[in-house]
Image (cartoon, rainbow, N blue to C red; front, top):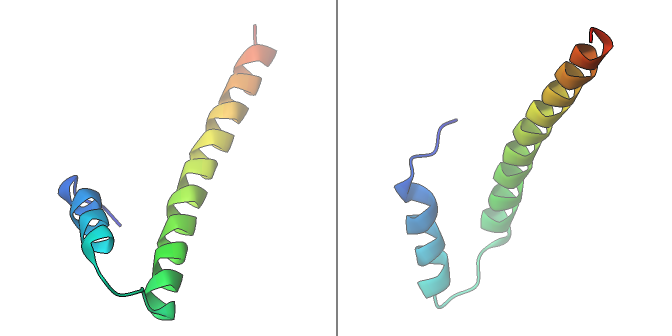
Length: 59
């Protein structure tokens, strides 16, 4: 899933200017999307760490 640069700013502004509390579903959706982004970032970090380790073995 790709996020266009304007989307985070747009939706964060909507959340701040909203005068009602978010529903349970909206909060769960935000949590779920955050977990997906975090997992993707974590996989990249693990891959990069392993690449550095293997590279250090061959030096």
